[in-house]
Image (cartoon, rainbow, N blue to C red; front, side, top):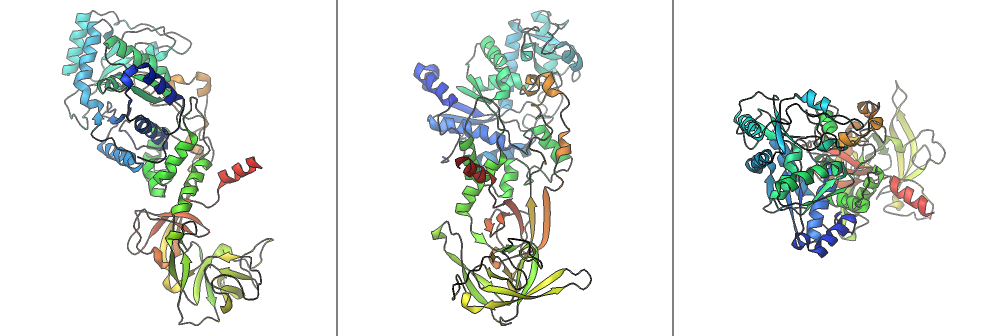
Length: 589
């Protein structure tokens, strides 16, 4: 079981479960589930949900199911099913033999629908999707009843059976629950339970031409599986009365739904619809693009499961929505990577340095610590020769104030090596750009310190030119230029009949929906910089994709799957600068 998870500490959900256990409700059982829709890849917001569900089950010695709510075959793919399982396992959770699908229950759900029809609590409606949306009303205006609402039980049974048999065209009829068209809760205004949809399902094929809506399938699937606590994000709060209504009127096992605040991050969008649009419009390279908040993207970028779980444990579980500064996530990542990442040297924008008084044919193997935070990590050998590469930014012909790196006449230390002094430069004849620096070294300064006690303020990293590995390095920044892309995060997906699969759009008051910015206008055009001709120390040759390390002085990096035997590709995971740590330090002061 993971050491950190968002079910590890007490919160309002554990208090409610404790009260249920004390009262004997559910016989003291705790059985949760994580119910993703297989219509996209999981993002870090989903990680909060499934870490909470699996964590609660682990805390109480209970069970947690993985169940796909696969009720919309037009948007679901086996690719997503596989990716979801990989992501859940990557964060350290296992569902054992409890892998289920809502499609497992299609026959039972259909039986439930017939039961409600027989009880006079469901009817077949011939209104179009636009008409249903129009007659549904608004938050300030009640809905109007369908002219088909008072069909007899016999007629509704007949029509629904014929819908099931495929006699009617797609979209021509739906089955609706008969509840209350004047309810202040839009979700209770005769919601759609079934629609006609001739689409091949990834598991049931062409067996069905009618499919249950998410709202109808969700609670009944929980009931069938014996779930005790249905832990949902806050956008489902307004759907709880409908969840309860179905279970009560069917007279079946009734789990308790509890809502928690979803995760919102600055400089990030969490809507699956928007993430899909980023992929399909080519704004990113795919669902696993390292700029995406998807778990596959974060994994490719170099995030660790431990860092993500530590972040989720830090933010905890709240009752009200808020926005978390992405700097906190990056802080948790740095804290974890600092402890586990080996140090390596890499030069991203190389400038050639010739050490004039170092023998041309000489090569030294210098000792370098693998990780100063981990004594057990030991040391490695780094080759040193007469010609090395250093960063262009570590040299200034005319240095600005407080510049402690290399400039004409100035001395710096080459990391793990010697102190060198710049004695000249070579410039491009056409541009005047410095293309090579000439230096002299002090052979008495090998390793650390100086024999005469003089202070050398600057230390820079380097790579031996003779031994350098050519590489491509991708530098990532936030995908959006503003902390609140578009100004208003969109709700969950709305179906064709004006119902809302996850309530979000129905919950937002009209005033809040007024003229948000175009979120795509906030996409950062500089979110990716690809550097070629980078030089790495030879220890980085042939590393496997997923290898994480710290490029000294530059940040934390991870080998990308695009790497080849001849040319490694590295993604920058995160810089060394820790904004969150600075904020916390300022607060303490």
